[in-house]
Each structure stands twice: as C-alpha cells, then as structure tokens.
Length: 428
Image (tube, rainbow, N blue to C red):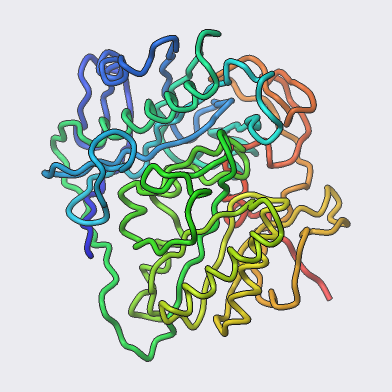
C-alpha cells in the first residue's frame, strides 16, 4: 500500500475573479466558492475572510479546520464517506496545499436545545501575539467561512451542512489550476525493514460520543466501531474526519490529515523503529466495563500486529482519560511497552491532581504541560467570526477587549501544548 503526495506551499493568498495557484500565490474567487456550496447553503449565510500568519487577527467560534487535499488524475475522492461512492483510500496520488486551512467558524442555531455534551466550546485562533503559540493553525494561511444559519435550520442539519461545506471547499482548493510551481513529492508507505528494529504501533484515541462530539472513519462514527487498524496513508487522504466541537481539546480534521505523530513515526520507520501502523480507538465510552474492554481490544490488536511497543495519545480530557489509561494498562499487561503522551489539568497554580486516572502500569508518560495555568490575553486589531465569545459556557466577553483565561480558550490548544513552550517541569 503506497500513497504519493504532491505538496504545495503558499507565500500569499488574495481575492481574485478566478481561483488559481500561480507560483506560491493563491488567488481565490468568492463566486467560485459559492458555486461549490450552493446546494449546501439553504438557510445558511456565508461570509468569507482571509488571514495570514503574523497578522493582528483573532478568529472566533472556530469549529473545524480542513486541509486542502484531493486525488490527482483518478476517479477517487478524498474524505471518503462524505459525498461520492463508497471506496477505500490511501493509494494513488494526492495533492495538498500543506500550509492552508479552510476554517469553519459558526454558532449553532438552537443552543438551548443542546445537552452539555453537545454544546460547542469557544475556540479562538490568534494569528499573532501571546495566543498564537496556543492556537492551532496560527502559523498557516486561512480561508475563513463564517456561517450564520437561519432559525429554520435544525442543529442536526447545520452540523451536517457545515462539515460538508468545509470538506467540499478544501477539496476544490486542492484541485485548482497550478502554474509556475512544482510540488514537493513524497511517498507514504510501510516498506519491509530490518526485523531487528523494535516493532511499534501508534494508538490513536479520539473523542466520539454523540452529535457535536464525535469523530468519523470513512463517514461512520467511531463510537459505532471497535478498535481498528488504519494504515498511515489513509489519514493523509482524509479517512478520519472530525465532528467534535469541543474546540480546545479536539483534533481538527486538518490535523487528522497531517498528524505529527504519524509523520514522525514514518520518518523513523526503517531507521530506529519498525512502524507497524495505527490503531484507531474510541474514548468516552459509557461505562467502566466498556472502557476496560476497549483497552483490552486495543492491546490484543497491538499484540496480533506483532507490536513490542506503542506510542499512545488521546483526544479530550476528563473521563476520556480513564479509557486512555485502561488502554495503556492493557497494553502493558500484554507485554507491549507503551509511552503515553497527554496533557495535565492541575489547576492555575499546579497544585491540583493532574490526571483523573493513573494506574501503576502507566510508568512511561510524556507531559504536554498544564492546560489550566492562567495567561493574560490582550486584544488584536481585527476580530473575525463574531462580536462576543463564550468563556466556556460560564460567561460572555467582547473579544476586542483583554481578558485573563487559560489556554483552553484557543482552538486546538491541547494539540499545541507540547510545542508552545508551555510544559510541565518536575523537580525532585
């Protein structure tokens, strides 16, 4: 199984009458975008904005970001399970604009009808300033789709529409005419390597519960599946799509398509490890017995793949940590030595219990840092997406004014903790 990637990178993005990539400058036509999504926009108004790295811009109400990817010279389609015929991905050729995100910002039309689990949490992206290191996507270009649904649109219909709008626009941008630039090419494959290298799997736990807090694999909710082997190449083609709007703790669709854990293990494959592939599993199971069984299934699958070791990370927090730790425990019990990567939530001063669960078997952990420490967040020149932010369902605030909060106000902040400089330090 082999996938060839054709990567393009931008140095500029601008509005134009026609959409095309000329050199490293992308011209985007609003009319072209509207044509792409006209059948999806009934009862939904869309505003279009651009943001560039380093600009004094704050994007609010971010629900998801999507990487522009499309199949090249084939009848196949990226983001399988969302439009088009059922098919498998991870082979052939795929083109990407690797530093551009289609960013969907919106509020749901009927928040009063949503349960606490369903209600989205505020997600901001600061393109510069103190918030940028905690904001996933602050170092990339953005085409922002600010969606405003009519009251006639149900929450369920809006959830489906916003996801398809983002995916379709991303696929369209990857397919545009390209002039005066050659792509970087790379191969994604798990070729046979020296059998003496340690055999390692990546355990990829996602949040999947119900509408607005779920993840899709080939268009199916992960909550309806058992732990599954996924070839790394499938991720690059969009086999895993986010439908989770817990903005700070989520893995965005774009990060599923370009995950640094997968990239790092592929880079090390054949050099320091024998990377066997990815085990996709669900977090936030409904009972302790389900959490335990999920861990046992993951561990058995890892062992059947021949794994001697595993790297594990999780999406989410709270009771999802119990699923995660049960998986780590089960893998250790099966003889699969497991390194767990996760954040801590130990209060603003660092004095509180950092993890809700910590079995003795989880004896090799990497901390991304304390997500609870307060930081001062100054205003930026421009706010895109709304005139009021929700401080995690506790209060509202004008995003044009300064405030004190923790990094969880920023979109995808949990995934950024490790490289933000915001790390835990242990002293003996």
